[in-house]
Picture 1 (cartoon, rainbow, N blue to C red):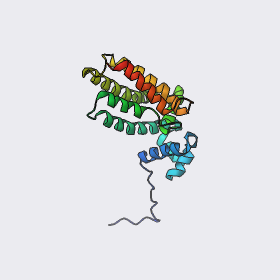
Picture 2 (tube, rainbow, N blue to C red):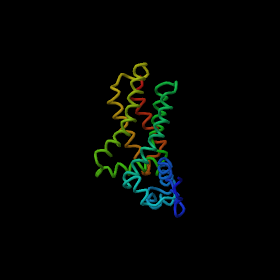
Picture 3 (cartoon, rainbow, N blue to C red):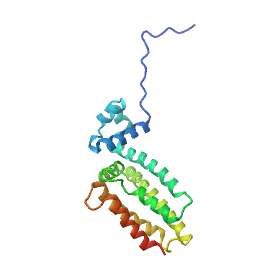
Picture 4 (cartoon, one colour):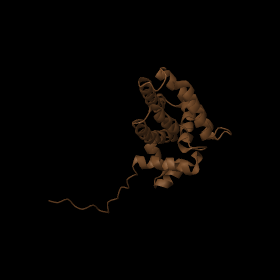
Length: 205
């Protein structure tokens, strides 16, 4: 015997956009309107969700920001891997790494987000700090491997790759913050020239 039909029409469940679409929309908002424009309510309007639904997905704005940064870093990581795996001299690939690292200019959306996430990390839990460290670790490991390759081929001086990578990234971070916030006299081209000169002096035979 067949069961009786429901008394009323079945309510259709409206599925949420895929998580990657939410993160891409968050990044687009930062790029177009700045970080202040990224609110749960505003992002919800952009993707057709309520702010409460977004909070269910992410739990907090801190988590939304960190996941957006991780998503952006994933894209940069793929680009970095393609650059570093090319058949080219180590110095040429190092220049490509540096070019990818340094912001495009003031209010670069990725660096704007990076600075905000690190600013909020003072109150972050161990899980969030670990995920932030993983982002930094990926950049560091790739640089160490590239330096070690250049040294083994005789293109670079025999420096300690790990120590040199730590110092070079500290230099890049400092200059990159200046570019991202628009400090006068610290434009992208000037920074690339400074870093290129440092690399030549410190690494080339």
